[in-house]
Image (tube, rainbow, N blue to C red; front, side, top):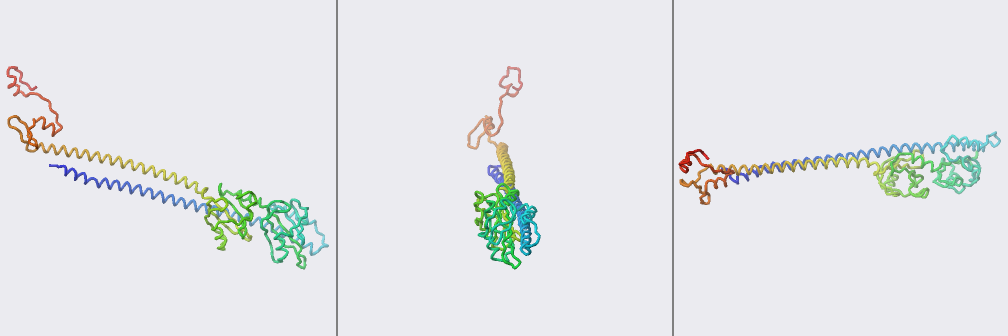
Amino acid sequence: MTTDSDSQRASHASRPRMIRLGAGFLALNLFVVIMAAVSARNSLRNHQDRAIATAQNLSLVLDHYVADTLGKADLAVSAVKDEVERRLADPKANTPDLDAFIQRQHARVPSLLALRAANAEGVIDHGSGQEAKTRVSSADREHFIRLRDDPAAGVVVSKPLVGRLTGSWVVIVARRLEHPDHRFAGMAIGVIALGDLQKAFSALDVGPRGSVALRDLELGLVARHPEPVPAGTAVGSQVVSQEFRAFTQSGSQAGTFRALTPFDHVQRTFSVRKVQGWPYYLVVGLAEQDYLKGWWREVYQEFGEVALFLCLTLVVFLLLRRTWLRQQAAQERLERLLAEVKTLGGMLPICSHCKKIRDDKGYWNQIEAYLNEHTEAEFTHGICPDCAKEVFPRSGKHTTL
């Protein structure tokens, strides 16, 4: 005979299966979340690696551009130097007009703003470009003083300065002029407009918050796109990140690093190169906010899908649990009914005369009441033929009612 303790034991025995099922759902969800996190991390590294490669490629392109611009300027300056020194060596030679010669050389190097020559006193007396005939003195300029005092200076590149003839920010490429006895005779100079460099920088696609900068070896700012402050006011500024300063101190010719730009407080990935043969650093920075925009979209999409998966698995688990609980309740009801049926199938104390049944408490109950209480049977009343003969002897109809 099945008892309540047997039913409870069966219920307890089935609970570990539900616990294992819940643990399985939990493990599956954890696995999906971990895989999504690993995928997002790998995608982040890919975006960062692509940003580094892009910055390196752009810095290499600019390296060639700046070196080519300075190299062509030096070739033009060297041509003027050779022509002036040839004239100084043979003043009686039949020589063409020096200004016309300089203008022809300038035409071959359109990246130059002007090409000029200055005498030993620093006065510009020949040249091309804007206000070519205006005589101004450069005797107080740092590059003139260096060329005058150092015969072995070679090519000299000035700090950014405001041109006295142009009124704009320029860089000077200059060489020393000498008499045949090596006395100082002046200088030949090529003028490069910083605005042209910034225009070239702005043509590169570094993103809405990217930056391109040219700095000298003392880290002074020469040109930058975009301008960090009102035009020209940051030229010469040596405010740089600690990472950039550490790179220059390492002696490396090229490298990459991540840093917060002091000018605008934007986190960028930088590629830095020392311009080959020239005293400059090229710095190309790509803003993380720009190149990680696509990564953030991927993360939102992927974790949205993960959240949907978690919701679906939770719904499935709850449905399975509800079904299990219903089955457990149905199983318990069935077991109780079977127990009651088996109880009725045992020995029942019944009155031999009135047919009442004695219950477990000692009370005598009508058989209809007892069965109605212990089973789901319902009763209707009639009369059998034998009883009909006895109760209704004169009716003549002794059929079952």
